Image 1 (cartoon, helix red, strand yellow):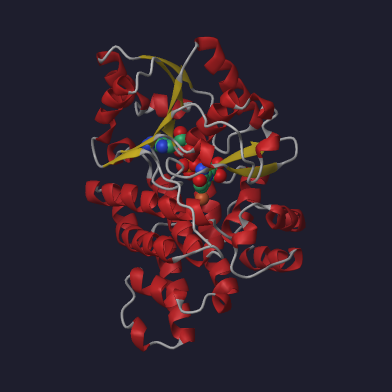
Image 2 (image 1 turned 90 degrees about the vertical axis):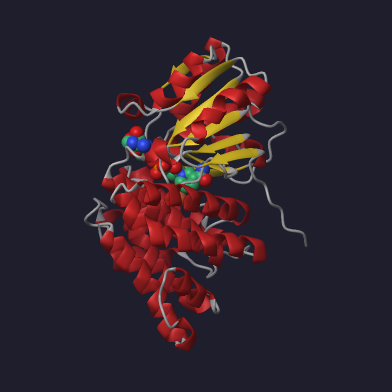
Length: 383
Ligand SMILES: NC(=O)c1ccc[n+]([C@@H]2O[C@H](COP(=O)([O-])OP(=O)(O)OC[C@H]3O[C@@H](n4cnc5c(N)ncnc54)[C@H](O)[C@@H]3O)[C@@H](O)[C@H]2O)c1
Ligand SMILES: [Fe+2]
């Protein structure tokens, strides 16, 4: 069987990368951008870094700033209306996963209007046409949505988040510029960074993992583990390394899938609007424990790449404990909450959350097959 790899056509990675947006838009003959973003990013002058460049170079744009964390079907629909109303021909997504995912959904539906209800895009739906060209500029170092073939939409009515997987949604250009991330407050840096670590770990142990993606995930684990603390301290080198580490994780997991941590994190986003990274970070060590016996030697490599010394002389039990311990330590150092109760989860919801987690598109990738009762028990143990 051949393994498929889908990656951006072009990517720019490094401080100052946004300068390249101008020449790319000019060379490709793009006429008018719809910028998909949120109001906070305008307020914090993050978006203006890009719009100033566009203005200086007479590149037309209109801003759509209605994105909210855990973006909803309605946000996507109003973005589609805006895109049509202003006569845009490409999208520039500026923001975290929420803005980039919203742009993907808009771009897919513009070119595949038979999916205008948005819901029918859930899962591995293959659309007929590539989405409108997207230039994706992440402002968090976490989701890697700029390089993934996934996007996540919240269905408020049905109280669930659904994952859409479609190679047609991948941004044509990823512009990963750590300067766009420097305004992130500590808590957001920590949470989105732990999301990236979760991608790397789940992508490494997921059922579809193979040698090439293993290489990417182990490198990502190494970069993220050594640089997240420094990024939280807002040191430029830490920011730059996190920007790279999360992108490398995205190159991997996008092509092989994730697992139960994401499956269990998505319902928290849908029920309580829990920030995605926080939900993952709280759940990650518990699901690592649950999965340990199904991962062969992989936790030895996770521990090694997280900087644990002496892993070659450790027993299976020791290196598994060491890997989970290193994740817990990093989480603690960057001040991630420890229990579901602390982040506002209600005990009476645990069963409904477990059912939703089992139905999530990420869950089948988990190395250990699971069921509602076992997921419920994991939630309970984290509560
Ligand atoms: N497409 C994928 O492959 C993929 C992968 C993982 C997660 N996701 C999805 O992405 C979403 C989460 O994205 P996220 O964690 O990047 O956060 P986000 O996009 O939801 O943003 C969270 C908050 O951070 C603020 N923010 C973002 N960048 C900032 C900056 N530089 N300075 C100050 N504030 C800033 C935003 O304004 C927003 O209020 C979830 O919906 C999640 O399910 C998608
Ligand atoms: Fe994630």
